[in-house]
Length: 174
Image 1 (tube, rainbow, N blue to C red):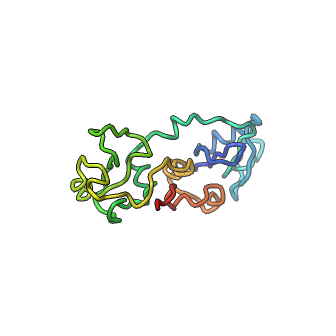
Image 2: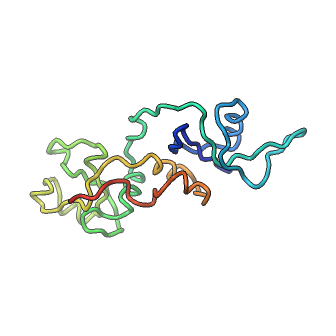
Image 3: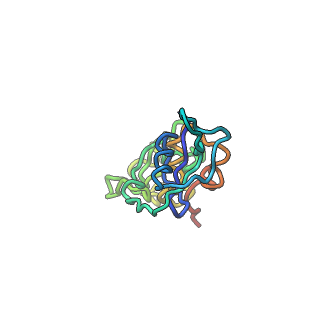
């Protein structure tokens, strides 16, 4: 099944959907086609534009709660699939910078990808106590990261709308 990139009216990536759903949004006047595929959609009587990227006509307010849901896959992608303490790429786990036993919450600003040995070595200590600080300050990832994780394949024509989602979506500390 081919997927279509859906942008908000502000050109912010929202999600991916099926070609059928995108076509319905365009026909109903709720979206416009920005990029089309090389071949048309055909019915018995007509040929239609095959949408590849669509933009909603009206702005859709996205609740921040939806964007903030933490999953291991999104966390590891945000952190570039690397341990934020030593930089290795093997056996990644989720680490709370301020441990939950010390009052730390499970929020984007308090979780980082950590390899199993670093996570074990840090234990339930604060970064200062363990002298282990994340390489970058954790923060919520860009919305485009969730789009790239939802799509089975990222076509080259989507890149201009997604930006540099391969790069970590947070600022460095220091």
